[in-house]
Image (cartoon, rainbow, N blue to C red; front, side):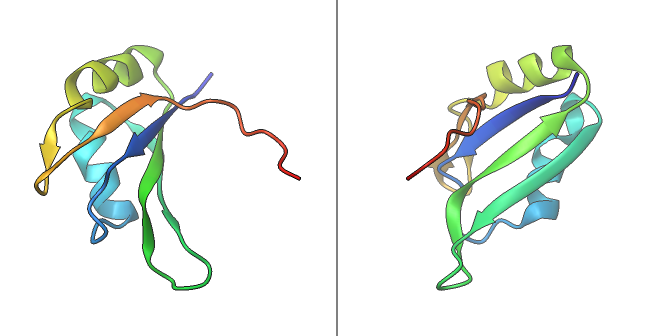
Length: 86
């Protein structure tokens, strides 16, 4: 089963492809998405990366959490399940 990672504190200039490239050295990235604000069309500064291999995802968390990318320390952890909002 695929493991999804939350990646926070991204530079607002990072796009989906650049996010995937950041994590490609850990294994095959199944998907990478930077979350975009609907109103402004700008990045919200966070995104999600999905790996098919759990070991690759775990390695990415341990190596990338706190790593400086574009002058900002990344926050990387396993994504929590989406909850219903009211």
